[in-house]
Length: 422
Image: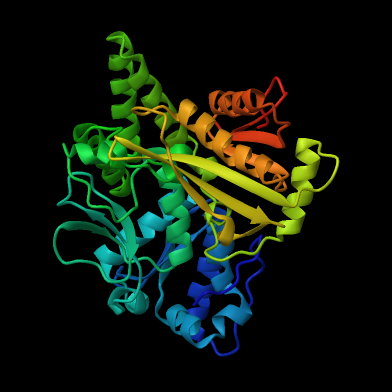
């Protein structure tokens, strides 16, 4: 019943197969949609003569989507025609964004069990949003095989792509985890765990690294659940009151965090186009185009071919290692991957560790007359870049182009440059 919706509703065309008994409804409903339905997100509902909801659908534009059912081509579709034959009225519920509309559709289908949503109601392969309740730090995941206990379920949803888009939008606001790690509160071993990229780009509060307490994390999950249950306005009021209380009591970091979350929630209607947030599962990017872009951004005389990257990791808090990876023409060259055990540094000191590994790596390349990479990429900020450059200076070796990447701030520091690239 997914009829393509035009940008603007067209004039209704009465299908030849439509019985005279339904012509009056067809024209009345088409006029109602044209004159009263808004050009904004929400859900539309078809009802039968007894007022029972027989179909629920979501829309980016209620006027365009609901209006599409009253076009000749749509109404002559067998399933749509059957819906129009049994319908007696059509109505709508407005939503603040596509995310809200998606959640509202799932709740209404679950609560009203509409006849023409039977596929969604019965088919267990449709996706659900699942929040674990038995873990210290609950995880949020999309599943087609929901658990029967230990979870809070939302759904089923008709479109998994829309659900993924909604999850990405909500994660920017509530910063929950989606990983499968079994994280226990108070287990100090997690303090030395290296968080994933989501923590670096501030889309997860990284309970895997004990950056947030169990109580604070669960408070974020409680807010998420309140939002998913349809309590957006009371949630905003509650968060604003908490923000003001935190500011009065000089808990400025907490107040700033709440302020940012409130802004994100308030702007969901501007950010709620799910198509814009969906990240495709498979994509292809030409590495050579990326290298050409890198040449331009870094103002290099020639296009780089070889890039080496250095990253520091801490194992259990008492052993530091460095990983070195190499890319040739934009593709990984694994035979040249290396791992260094840091020898001269006691404890956790990323700057000194970067200094040691670069000194060891490039001293060997120099002594063996090996070719240097075109670019050396260091994981870290300006401090890590300075440590790397100090190693070249002490060795008396002319460095290649050296840059460092501060993921959290989304900045690239380049040797010799005063300001980072953003």
